[in-house]
Amino acid sequence: MSMYTIPDFATLRRVLDRLYVRYTPPRRAEGDDVLGTLVRTILSQQTTRAATDQAFTALLEHANADWHRIAHAPTSIIEDVIRPAGLARQKAQRIQALLSQVHDEFQSYDLEHLHQMAPEKARAYLLKFKGVGPKTAAFTLMAACAMPLFPMDTHIFRIFERLRWLDPTLGDEAAHQQMQALIPPDDRLPAHMALVEHGRTLCRARNPLCEHCPILTDCPTGSSPPD
Ligand code: SF4
Image (tube, rainbow, N blue to C red):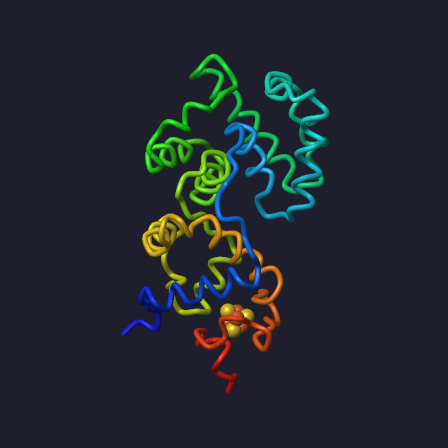
């Protein structure tokens, strides 16, 4: 029998409520420009929030917030501008390719029509862009369009694995589908925000601070001392 089990609703509710008390996450997204949010989310891949903010601000300032200028600038210039976010060459190429594709398709740098799409359709649409995976697509639509999707980053994967809710051998897409089905729509944004904060502060990759954890009693990893 697998050591990983989907929790019952009472357990899920208890865990989320305890995390909400600790981290007081926002309950709903404010909504934002879709294309800008998507570019920012690509920049945020494998880096910190501070580095993302720095690179995104620099990118907008460099081009006067003009997507056309960013799309047509030499890639090496964009790479230099976004260097604080890391993986600068790859991200610069992906952002420019994304902008060109959007412009080719709609003759404008605008993805606001995604607000009107059903969440799964909008998600499938974004997944066709190179460099846009399940997490980036779901986060963009959750943050920009307030869609009830559940993006999972490395912190969330780690916490769910330690709770033994998620089998680590599942692929990225299957894991997103499974956990999104588990988390009620109204909880997806606050659960995402609280879990990311939990992974950054207490349930760290190395030396998790289990003795301070608000969900210790529901966590087999934290409550079973190492042999
Ligand atoms: S008890 Fe430890 S391993 Fe479990 S969720 Fe809390 S910090 Fe993470």
